Figure 1 (cartoon, helix red, strand yellow):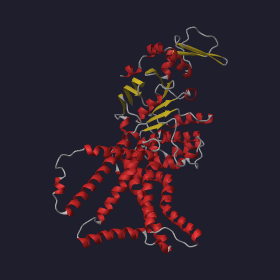
Figure 2 (cartoon, rainbow over the protein chains, first blue to last red; figure 1 turned 135 degrees about the vertical axis):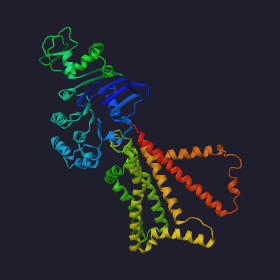
Figure 3 (spheres, chains in turn brown, blue; figure 1 turned 180 degrees about the vertical axis):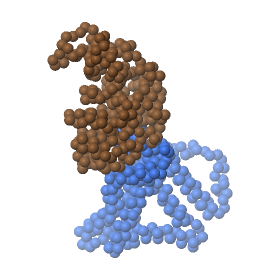
Figure 4 (cartoon, rainbow over the protein chains, first blue to last red; figure 1 turned 90 degrees about the horizontal axis):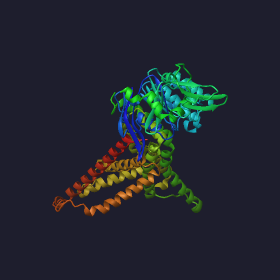
Length: 281
Length: 269
């Protein structure tokens, strides 16, 4: 389990994260959303140990990630937005580095490479950005890590690869894994992320499961604008609205509409969904 | 699991690092090691073209070229092999490989301070030896010259009764020199994001300037060096100076090594 407590981080005078607290539980694929510059990548790099928390703590199974102990690193994989161009072909790369991750499976890596149709014989530094990304995604999923942090994993992927990514993510992450995916491409991952975390400048606006969101909000895909809607937007063939769920009916959560609704009604969401960090403590 | 150092994990990691290093740098090491021969052949061909006979530069030229290339390699390899360390993409991946910072640092150290200079020496000496077998103009081989120089020092010591350097001391002096130079440039490769070699040289120049400016102000106290002047035996003075020089060299090298280790341990991306 990941416990983040009163985490603050700033770049010089620019405070990015301020007193963030939350718990990330096993068996979930968290969607980490937020506008540009709110600290999504910073949070991921803090979680994996590439940065040191300036204030507050991060605890992963009793380890501090920044200590970079091999015991913890062998259970973590961080897939950055821009991935390394290794001067090896994919299988060579997997053989050379995979052995350091406790549960790495070369067979899984091979299967994923096949699934993503990555040319096995090409050197990674000669690959296109999409192929390179898919090789690293394959490595991340084959690592068998219990903590996988992905920063914009679908950036640069073509349309079929996005579907393959969702399939692979569901198929190859273990049941007790904690996956955190930071993305702006919410439509690519709408069907896989649960819970959703929405970061604001220096704050967590929402940290809720899809079930909780569905219980408290109603997503109306009708044609008439409701004046009580928290957010409404015209789409081809009608409109989408986010309403407080007063009827108890379930509806399909539209994450993009949810994101916009949260940003328009920050206080309402905080009041209704509460502060997850204080709930967790 | 020992999170600081584990022999089996280090062994596995060293093999991986070596493979990566070989993939990216074998050509640089090979070309630099062969550059002495290439330069020799080039001058030979020029001589042949303009003078009509085969001749090239002699032993002194070959010794200078050999040493120059050795230091060029020691200077460029750290940034070429580990320069990615400061890059966000490759450096981030490297930092998160489940191996301890000590193991990563030791692999770097072994490769840049021992393996690469050793590979250069083996290739350069072998090529030079072959060259001297084929070309009678080349004079003595580098191996023979170096062992001859060491022998001459030994003979001088024996005949004059003045002990200069034993073979072990000579080896230690050369090793400390090579290692300290390699670690300095390794440190530069780990710290500077761009123009790693140039900035390291600049930092060295600035350091030397600062030291020379500060030296007049460092006053160890009157009579600090009296113990040295009180020594009547010149051999004792020489041995003491030599020992101080070696100890200083080893301490500086170790200090640079510790600094580089902490850089590996605390880098942030």
